[in-house]
Length: 333
Image (cartoon, rainbow, N blue to C red; front, side, top):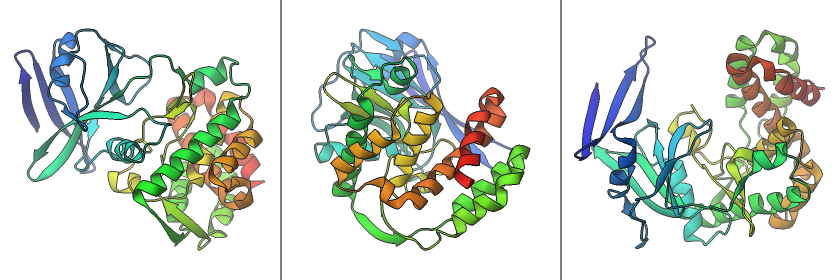
């Protein structure tokens, strides 16, 4: 099944429902027409608080490994077209808007959105944000040997974003649940035979923390160096969609800020660069809470992320599998 949304004479938005043998389905957005006509989509964007968008005469599609299509217009704004769409507001729109509302300086402000309502349900199709033309991607900095002195500043920026999300959307005391961690563990062990020897120790680490008191709030959910941009003025966090492939209701659930801290620490491991201690120092300065004071919970979130990485690498990049395997051995040791 598919839905066609004509936007102009030579650009259509097509929503295609892909149905699988197990009965599940996904909806994908496909743009049909001349690539140079992305400006036609820009003209349909509903702007935020009177933002003025460029006319879109100068546009370029960004390359690289991305789960969405990103188009820069006149080096002023970036249009992100969501390839996989689900009913409900996209968390990237929701959280970027919330952080803009409280004036957080560590995001690229939201400039507009584009979506449809079908059968009473909202579908987010695209968003427009300010484009940081003078920014450098954190992963490129780290792997290019340009990260000296940045860990502390990045830690402060992450803490600031967490504070902004707490201010905008609130926090709540809760008890740690480990059901999803256990499910991820079993799925990873089934997919990666090398993990079998770590299964019991990992399960013990998770179950021992069940019921641990935590403060829950909205978080980034998929934080790593590739989701951070360094401008001359500050670090910016981008791509607040959450972990790819997870259901929308899970991606919008409150979680501990330690999940994001753990994600960044895992990214340092991948890059072979970045000072964990300096990052945690910076986070403590920005938040008043040192993640190392919750070492067992932080380690559990790191382990959970490493299990996700192991399953991913085994399927898509087996040459990188040794990285999460080494982390898992360390974390359960």
